[in-house]
Amino acid sequence: MYFNGQNVKSLSSQKFRGWRNLFSLPLLLGGVEMLKQRDLQDCSILFELMAHPDVFPFVRHKANSYEEFLFITRQAIELEEQGKMISRTIMDEWGNPIGNISLHDIEDGYGFLGTWLGKPYHGMGYNKPAKDAFFHELFHEQGINSIFMRIRKVNKRSFYAASKLPYATLANETRSCLYNEINQNEEIYDLFEITKDNYLLHTLREDYQQLEVTHLKEA
Image 1 (spheres, rainbow, N blue to C red):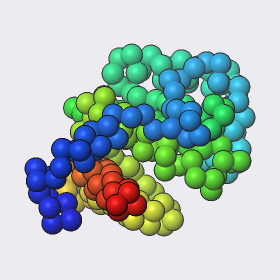
Image 2: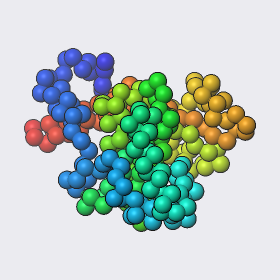
Image 3: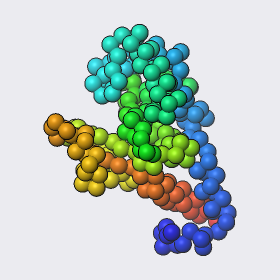
Image 4: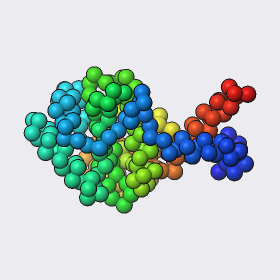
């Protein structure tokens, strides 16, 4: 395995230990873990955030009342116990619930990603670290091999954002059976895939580059 022209085996053991330690750490924001298990106590705040008209259309499991949101949250907790779903509450640096990120329809080591943030938190830098923390858990702790993202073809902005992710690949052709399955009646969605190997290679490369910068500063 090579990074920047160097064989991983030839790198110093100190650098390898640095990578291993980085992989084992939970991702934090302001010293607070970004994700936590779903909790009924968060439902009041999350329902208000989800109900915003700029958020509601993009939520997979919509709730039109607080009671319905409670029911959906209980159902998510039960589905996770059955191994069919993994769902986490996203928190800000003060530990306040600000959104949700989930892997739906888990089967044979893969599932579909769904995520939303409350309107006040859009554009504030929470999306990427929340996804990094979630992907870390899925690939390192939950035994997930592939994460799929289905994006509406009319949503050009989301398509562009997904296509710019260095670890995501357009899977309309490579996963044609699944692509046809999610577009049974009409071609509505593009399909992207994030494999465990691609994501780990990406994080390894990023960590290596960061360690190189650190060593240069210390030299």
